[in-house]
Length: 214
Image (cartoon, rainbow, N blue to C red):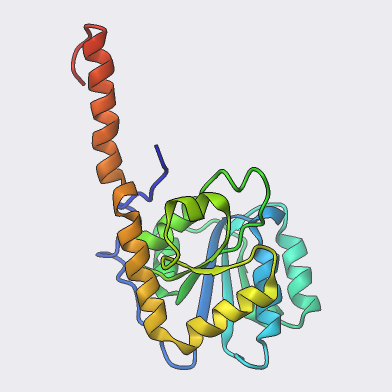
């Protein structure tokens, strides 16, 4: 059974996704802040686009051992003012509001044997909040989602991520198409469907063993 977003929390009725405003491009990522998450790749990509897109910004919500390293990297690349790291815990409602206001989510996982087998929870949360996603290629994600669902880039490749960011900036229609394809691709993985499969499995096991129905 796959993970999925809790739609009672990541709720677009309470936090409607905001349209992109002229002269702004805000990327967002959230969750664990460790080396394998690839936030350094995103910072490097922002640095490559610093002159071309002076209003490009990255918002980071989360905790982990890599925060200081990321701040040093942003400082060294001259984009410290473009990278906003929220070090303190924030209420879930505040995080969800930030997702709704951002222009795109970034999932920049490094690729290795483990991450070729797992899926990122934040991916489902971005999809549920109807945010276009820039996604590093891993076998697990490519296995479950089609080629039109995300703005793909090669893991640990800032230049390729910069290319995807540039296209996201230049082509708002593409960004909307990513949302629609990802939403369609995710439909079968939503908890509302997996819940019924889970309960049916329990019913079958219990009935085989003479137990009560759940």
